[in-house]
Length: 301
Image (cartoon, rainbow, N blue to C red):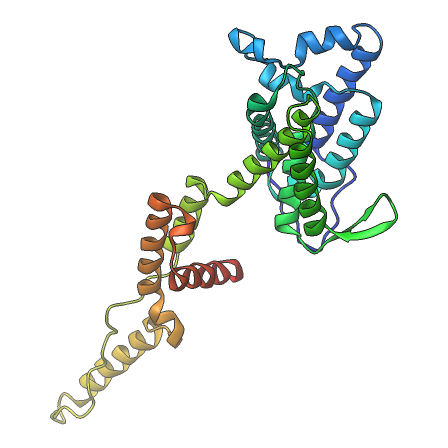
């Protein structure tokens, strides 16, 4: 199931993937606070370096365990605030995959800085969600601490700088683990968003292939200036009339800009092939302008 949401349209109160992610985190927190306990839940679902020897599933489950109510509340509120709109533009499945991908980025960044501290919390995945929101709606404003209005792009920039500074400042201590895990989620999110997927290139190719083919040449009417005898005059006049009717029916009015479409489509295919082989950063200025021009044209069709 997929959605279409305009950039100026407000998201719904809750979306499917965000709802289930929040529900799963709250359910684990309930067990953690009542039946199981913090330490046991950390051993069951949290990740430590020793788990690399066999408990591989913990690289996913660590995202659902938190260090306390405040930790859980901040992450779930941020997921709800930014995740709904991103999910509506993508799809529940696409959003969930991106969320888990960013969480894996946090786990990978944790490995060289673990210092024996367990890895728990959804912060890395949530930071990736914030990045996705900021890259699509950078000038949207949120209320920092519920009071101070701030554009999302500056909020994410401040989080990157703050986590980097605090991570370096606490290097060698267990407290640095969380900061670098947050940055790992942001880094994986950035890689995901900057890498064109084969599906997106295929969809663009399909839209280009749907452009109408132009006729190689148009039918020509029989010229009226041909010499004819009086005996065949009526017959020739009838042929000329039918020929003109065919021309009027078949010959489309072709705007000047449409005559260049086959050539532009061929050029766009070459650009898409280059992206598949070498990545988006390999494009020249002219190739980027062509890609943007054709994307705008296809969106307006």
